[in-house]
Amino acid sequence: MVPSSKPLRHFVYLLRARYMDNFAFVHINKTGGSSIEKALRLPFRHHTAIELRDALGEARWCRRFKFAFVRNPWDKVASHYFYRVKTNQTGLGVDSLEFNEWVIRAYGEHDPRYYDKPKMFMPQVNWIVDENRRFMIDFLGRFEQLQEDFRLICRQLGIHADLPHEKASANRDYRRVYTATTTDVVARWFSADIAAFGYTFE
Image 1 (cartoon, one colour):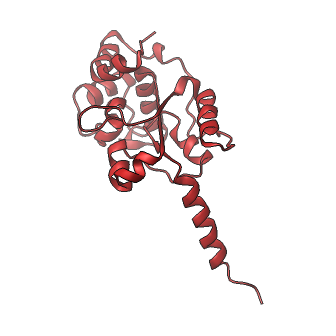
Image 2 (image 1 turned 120 degrees about the vertical axis):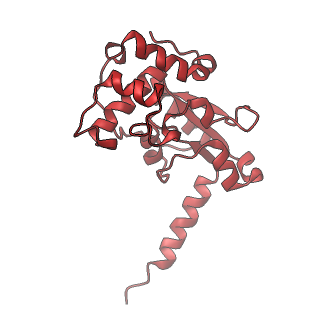
Image 3 (image 1 turned 90 degrees about the vertical axis):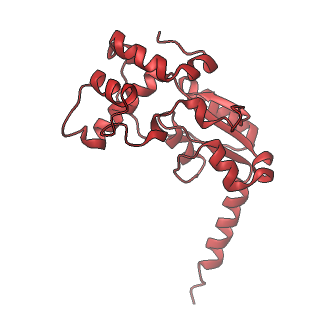
């Protein structure tokens, strides 16, 4: 008689729950988060630190090692656009809108045809601060040194995990796609990120 797999599934679930109880990952879009979630066997989700804290409760939140990754805002916006074209979000893959026009409409004017999910457009700082604008995480990684910072996180957690490359977009120099106008649009919208993380267009 073949034994039931239900106890095994339950055991695996308990192991995973215990493993995940050590940390909390704030997945800011377009910062390598899909790869991190796959490496750490996490569900795909975009929750702010406040949302995760409220879901877990203050005590459980405080016990965890909390981390997030950020990215140069101009690079992030370019990646955001090209991924949306690739996946035909808001029709960009079919009814193409040139990059700089999209930046103006989405980030500058908040045109609802393109600015469809405000959370995916908001400054990265907003993902990781509390109601009083205080940072809520223990470690802030950089997309620009994703592998190195991920290794530091694994060392902190006492685990080994290989980082895959999920949702990869074409490797391009973001500086080549901007005009002076759209460079300024991004600088204004992400001014808090630029101040907090020291990013520059160059």
